[in-house]
Length: 511
Image (cartoon, rainbow, N blue to C red; front, side):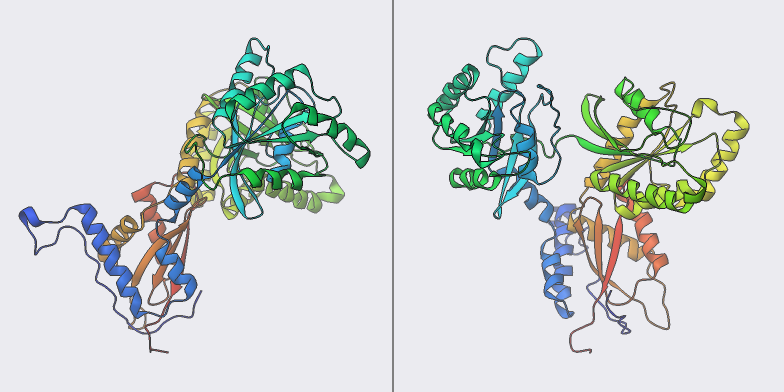
C-alpha cells in the first residue's frame, strides 16, 4: 500500500438520484446517472498521481465482460477416437494438469467437457469426448452421438488412434465421417512411447488423413508436435461461438479435522462405499476424487484425509493435515468444511475455516451428526457458533447427517449460491454509485483534522471478488470492514470471501 497522504484533498462530489436541474421529460434515468457519475469520477482521477498499473486498472472496469466475449470466440479443438485410446490423457497433457478423468477402463468419459487451453501464446478450447463406437447401442450410442456433435461443434478435430493396435474397422468408419464434416483433422498416433514404436505410427498413413503424429500422452513425448500441427490449421476466431460451457464439473473440497465424517459424507453422496470409513481418526490416507451426480449436475468431490495422530508426531500431524488441506484447496473452487456437532467447536475447526478464507475459495459449512443432537447441545452449539465463527457469518450453513443422509440434498443449493457469489462481478458504475451513497451517509471518521476521500472504485477480479479503492488518504481497517459489510448487504456474496485493497494516491504537485 502507498504511503498515507496527509492532505485533505477534495475529489468529484458523489451524486445519487436524478439531476435536480433537469426535471420532467429531460430527467436522466438511473442508468444514465450511473454512467455520468462513473465518467466524472474517472475524470477527477486525472488530478492525482497514478501509476501505469493504476491507469490500466481504472480503464479495465468491465474487463470481465470482455474476457467472456474472448472465451466465447476462442477456436474449439475436439479430441475424438475409440474408447480407451488415451483421449483424456492427451487432453490432460495439453492442459498441463490432471483435469480430465483417466482410468484404464473404456467408457469413463461420457459427455463432451470443455476446458481452456493455451499453446505458444494461442488460447483455445479443448473438448474431451467419450469413446466412439460406430455400432454402439444403449448408453454407448449416446456417447457416440456426443462425439459426433463434438465434431460438428469444433473448428479442428484431433483424431486419436492407438498406434500399438493400428487402424481398426471403427477407426476407418470414423475417418469417413470426419471427411464428410469438412473439418481440419490432426491425426495423433498415441502410445508411441519410444523411437522403436514410430514405425507403428507410420502405418497409420493408410487412413488417408495425412501425417500421423506419434505421441505418448502418458509421458508427453511428441505432444508439442501435435499441438503445433493443431495451431497450423486453427482459425483466429471460432465458427461455433457459444457452443460450450466453461471448465467442466465444479470442484468441491471436503475439509475438516479427522473423524468429522468426510468419508461418510462422500459415500452417502456417491451412493456407494467408495472410501474406507472407520471411527479411528486417520483412516483416509490419500485424497480421493469422485465425480458425483447431484441436483442434475456433475460435481467433482475431493475427499481429504485426516492424519492419524501418533503421540511423538502430534505437531507433525497438524503440519501434514494443513498441507493436505492446502493441496485440496488448490484443486478446488469451493470447500465444504464439516464440523462435528457432537463435540465443541475446536481450534482445529477454526484453523481449517481460516485456511479456506485465506485461500480465497468459496465456503459452505456443514454441521455433521445433527441426528445426534439434543436440545441442550443445540443451545450450546448456537452460542459456540456466535462466539467462534463470527468472522464467517456470510457462509451458507447446512445441518446434515452423513450416516443417515439427513438434509444432504441441501448441499447443492448452498454450493451453487457460494459459487455464484464467487463468480460475481459488479459493474464499475454501479459499484461507484453504491459507494457514493454509503460514503454520503457514513463518511470516514476525521483523524487529526484529516478526512480521506474515496476517489474511485473498481472490481479488479472475481474468484474471489477483489475490489480496489483509490483514496486520498489512509482508510482505517474498521472502515474497510464497514464497507465490506455494506457490499455484502447490497450485492450478496453469500458463501464467498471478498477482498478490499486501498491505493492511497496524492494530488499532482503535492510531493
